[in-house]
Image 1 (tube, rainbow, N blue to C red):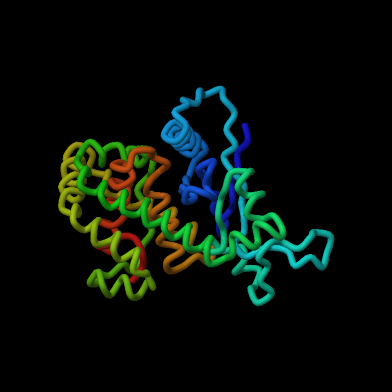
Image 2: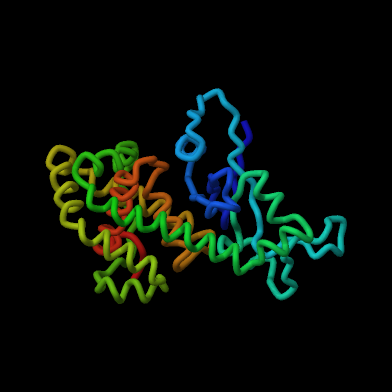
Length: 278
């Protein structure tokens, strides 16, 4: 079985793309675990082909592709399709310039001259943006299904976390001020707005669990803070940091409702200024 993982600013992310991605909209999504990536690959295969993939069946999960090519052709490697000499190495390897495809589609868009001609950067960016909008809308809709069962599933990882004694300044700020200070974009603001819609449910859930487990709120906060500082110490900030914290909050869950529950917990902590500095 062939898998692909790509380190985005030090964090391994797994991606799955539809086998006919280059023709049908690059139905891809980032995942935090191989298990979740495999499960989604099987689901997509069934949706499109009607074939149910068994656990023992081989699945080509994908290859990393650069929208604007990686190599200029001056060294041993041949020139990559859509190479842009005006981009820095960091810009080429940034998530904004990455797309994940099955092997067939990867070869198709990177073929010279056909792939370079048929799949210019603008087209690949447009396809990727359209797909990400579909995923984002599906996640936003899932917030309506967030309740105690989903929150319980989304936070059970905190059982093994020890409360933290770390003292930081997370002074209470208005949400809009905190969004501005963390340089979050319109997509992140929309996600936060949806999460705030179930913030009272998250708070009620945490209070309910704390009646039997008084250390639960601190363990939950400590788990998020540990990941926050791990990323922060790698120099990750702003929207990139918020995006990776969102991935962490979803914990590799497959169901959108459970992913939304994890996001709702993160946004509750964001609003309460218990995660993310002012």
